[in-house]
Length: 214
Image (cartoon, rainbow, N blue to C red; front, side, top):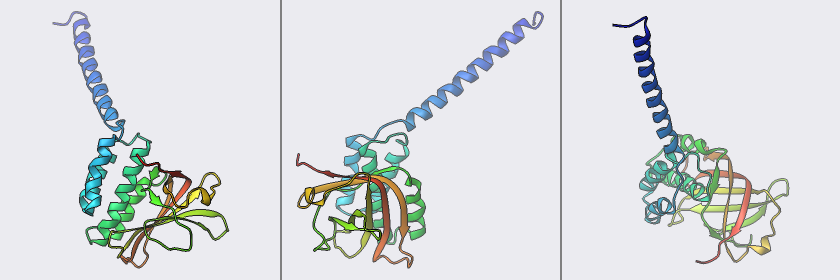
């Protein structure tokens, strides 16, 4: 029996408190899941799939890593983001993903930090695949440019354009292995839905970083 409603109110408050604590615990667990950081081991798990060009496996692995690390802005997450987009482009070439699904996936990363693979930097006299070059854009401004192709060089997965945040001196990079990255500004797909080339990636606030051998 409730005495002047005191006992009933106490039980009601106790129930409400338990529900509140359960809700707070759930929010904490969800928040904690999304605040994890990409580890070096996470990054390494994707590499074998890319080396053997099992693009679907690389895409699935990188998607899983990215979905659990949404608050991470590290270089490693930037690299895994690029792996995800690159492997999706590879899936398009293998008819495992449509151009429309590719752009839908890639657009999720617009405005996010992205770090590309390291490539040898060459001068503009050679239009080499999987290498970095410094060229002039339509306005005459210096930009970085990479043609990222599959191993057989039968399809270009990504044209990559880098608009650098600070002035760069190409002579400091030519002949060296260089990694570029920045903020993914825009993604375009081949308007003809061809697999000769799949996508153009445009990177703002970019950097160019010489990679030293380990």
